Length: 130
Image (cartoon, rainbow, N blue to C red):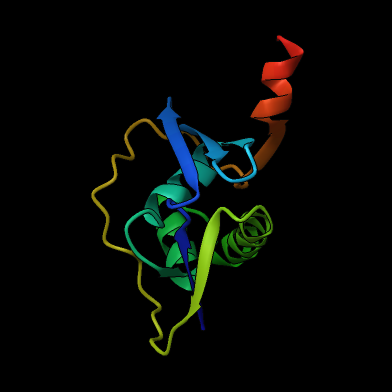
């Protein structure tokens, strides 16, 4: 089983209004995440998590069907891997439980498919003068 953790060694990020803005410090690409993606990112900041743990937690927080959530989480993780925003490692431990988290969920709206949007790279933005 694979586990996933935010690649904090190669990223800088800020979270505002339940949405993350992430800069990949090596490639200078910058991204934003919606609230569900940001919640997943927060879960992966401090430890490696399995996709099942992430899906169970999202399902519980947003009170959504686990079948849909699992597909959404797996697709989102693939996008994060492709962007080098998460690290992966093999794990022999199997977990079907939700992550215990102290994250505040009071400001979260209804579930939306986790999304990562790439805007480009900072060097191009700076040079363009915008």
